[in-house]
Length: 55
Image (cartoon, rainbow, N blue to C red; front, side, top):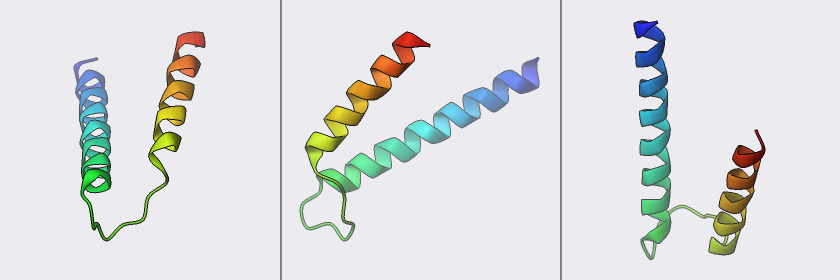
């Protein structure tokens, strides 16, 4: 069970680092990546929270 806990912790850490990096590049003006509008991120976050609450 300890190995599974470590694997889940590593996966969650990796996901959080990827999300942080994504939004950091999104916030910088003049970035080289093209992202969706910020309203899309707010809407998708709300959808994710609702889906998580229903599960």
